Length: 470
Image (cartoon, rainbow, N blue to C red; front, side, top):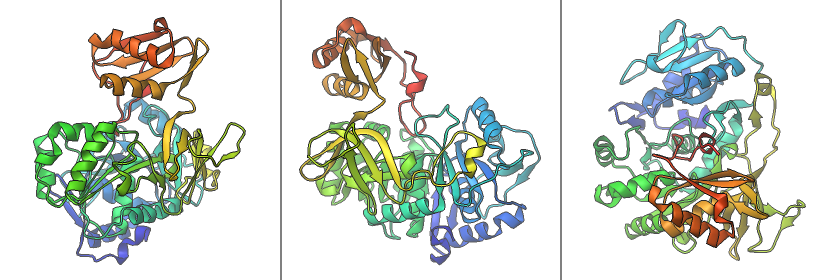
C-alpha cells in the first residue's frame, strides 16, 4: 500500500484538523480499501480541491493508494483557470466541498469516518487521455498559479522522497507536525508523505497564523515541529512564537525561498536554546520538494546556505560550457540528481502518456557556489537577470540589497530597458533608487519604483511575479 500505511498500528491517529476531526491509520486504510468500489472509480485524472482538513488528506491518500491520479488544486482556484485546466487535461472526477466544485453534474456524497462538513464527488463527461503507468500525481509548477503547466510525479519518486525526508529529519512516530502549508503545495505534500510513512500524527489547519484559533490549536495539540516558507516566519515573528507556550516544539524547518538572515538567526537561536533543531531546506516542485538541507549544527554559522543534498541525492555545479565545477566559491548552474526527481512537465493532455524524461537529473535553473565545507549558496536565477546599460543585473540580488539595506519587503521585475521595484512604502522611493544605483552601477533613471498595497503572493507565500506589470 502507498507509504506502507497498512503496516502502521491501526489505533494510532494519522491526522487531526483544527475543525476537531481526527482519523486513525486503521480508518484511513479502510477508507482507501473501499474508495474505488464504493464509488465505481477507475484509473483516471481527479481534480482535488484542497483544504487543510481530514477530507482532503484522506482523498489524496486514497487516490494514491488506488492509482487514481490527483491534480491538487486550491479550493479558491480562479474559475477561468479551472475551466482551462479541465479543457486541457480532461478530469474524470472532481472532489471537494460542494461550494468548491465549479462545475455542473450529479454530486455524490463521500462518506468519511468523521467529517466537519459535506464533501462530494462529481463525475465528468470528458474523454480520458491515456495515462502512463508510472504517473501518480500532478501539481502546478511552483509560483505559476495562472499557468496550465503541470509537473508529473511518479509513485517511486514520491515514496523515495518520503523516506529520504524522514531520514534527514530523523522522524519517529512520536512526532506531531503542524501542517499549515497548503496540500496542493509540493512542500505541504512532502510533510504529509514523510510523516505518514513514519506513523506520525499530523495536525492540519488552514487558520491564519495571526488568528486566535491558530494559537489555540497548536497549543492544545502539542505540536513538535513547524515547517514554513519565509512568509510563515514573518508572520510567526509578528505573533511572537516564543510566547505561544509550546513545550513540545523541538524542530523548526524552513524552505520555499531564502529567509531574511536576521530572522533565521532569531528562530535558529530560539529553538537551539530549547534544545531543538533549526533546519533550512531547498527544493523545487520538479524535485518533489526537498532536495537539500542545512544540517542544524550550521544553522547559525552558515546563515543563507542551503547546505548539501538530501540522502540519496547529489548536488553539483556546471559552468556555461557544461563542465562540472570543482573549485569552491565559483558560481555556476546547480544540478540535482536523485530518485525524487519527477518525470517531467505536462502542457497538454497528450503529455500524460509520457514516461520519465529526466532520468533522475534536474538542472535547477539556480545559480550557486559551494564553500570549502561543501555547503551550497544560491546567488540567483538564470532567468531572473536583466541587461541594462551594458550591466548584467540580477533581480534577486536587487531584492536582497533593498531588504538588507532598507529593511523593506519588495519585488523586482523588469526588461532590458528598465528595472521596476514594487514596494508597499511610498516614502522610500528615492532611497531605493540611490542604494540600487550605488550598489549595482545602474543609472537611477533606469530604475522605477512603484508602490503597491500588498505584494501578490501564492498560497504558499511566494511572490507571484507574473502578476506584476513591467
